Length: 175
Image 1 (cartoon, rainbow, N blue to C red):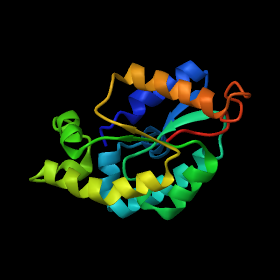
Image 2 (image 1 turned 180 degrees about the vertical axis):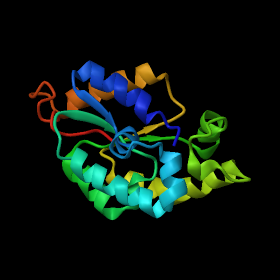
Image 3 (image 1 turned 90 degrees about the horizontal axis):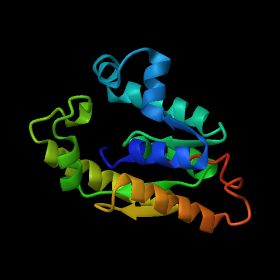
């Protein structure tokens, strides 16, 4: 949450000439309502069910670059789908940096609490090991600009898939 997945994903997709999908935006498009409303009506469990179905569907599409919601790794099925469906990038960031990036954003239901920094620390402790488990590549933040991160990822994909001009990764989403 706030690590830059959507910003970097869009830039990378543009450079790879691939379709970009943000799984949270896809959930909103499928339901016709914003994620905070899904949380309000169905709770986090209802949202996570919708998220799992969306991830299962999207990891079958190709060629795409995909940004996922921050909690996607909580579900073992999601982790398996992501790992089996593509080259997974984890944009790692400290809770303090994430707080700075998200503190004015009212569209993050999990942070609508008395102590959002404390909540981010809890989420980070829970999620970081899961992200590292599923990631093919970890990019630590704070780092350079989103443009520089996208360029680094493009170079890394070229290194990982040198003979393919990214065709080996063309059916693989990056999360």
